[in-house]
Length: 339
Ligand code: PHE
Image (cartoon, rainbow, N blue to C red; front, side):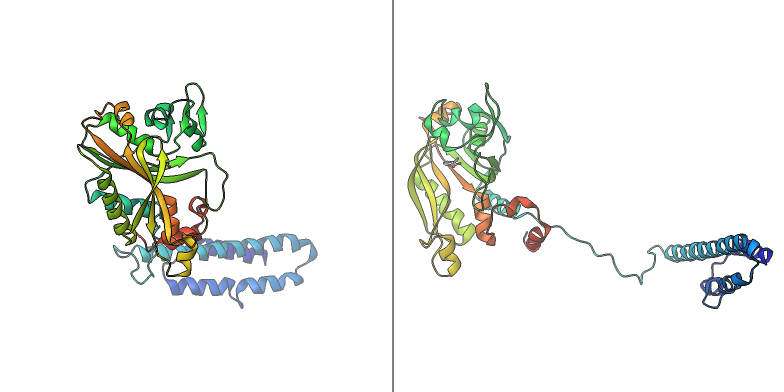
């Protein structure tokens, strides 16, 4: 009996076919529910005790050989079928291609840079790790200036100070140092402040800085530019410039957009006032121009800075700023239809 099984093993090993039906018949012959293996296993109890061990081993070997033979022949058959045409098997269902989505911060940033590109602004960038001069001193915040406390800074090194920029206004300075007026540039980027993290504020967020320096630039130009921006961005043209203070602009103002009070959401996001603050602005302080080697008697300019995260939260009804940096796919996937 053992010899008989051994000869089956040899037969199985020698078997080969590229015909699906033949392979299936072969499978049924050995592994089918009425196949040879069933018979051999059933015969086990008739085998004399001293032969049981070898018998069991041999039957198992036959089973394993038959199984792997059937599998390898089937695989070979499938890959052969796939390779038949240049395009493989055209009846197979297509592989779904999963498209990514843009991050809401990028969506808003691109929209803003597009709007300003249309009126001649280029895009400039600067480093996130800054020195004291570009982040503070050149912007009229000399050492010991109390306004330095307005922005809690993360220091990388002390003396000389190396820090994570607290605003994109540092890029203004770099741009003015390296370019002659007329200057029309916007600088998007990430900024950092040592602040407690909550649903409304984070220790890093994004701003877009705008800078226009030329002969005869006035506050009216600033207002007109901002009005153009809010109309294009939000479809809202009513803005309000509230007097404020920034060391690098004089005069300075906070920019408010009239959002309206029609829906419950309008109430919520404007705290019942209808007005929404989107950033700060002002006329570039002559000292700042001089710090960047631009003649303040000949040239004037305006600058503004708006928060990208705030706008993204507003436009997409995002309730918590932390969602913007948690990278939860369930959140990010919702922006697939945006561009
Ligand atoms: N840098 C200011 C801030 O971070 C915003 C600003 C930019 C104000 C340019 C005036 C001009 O709050």
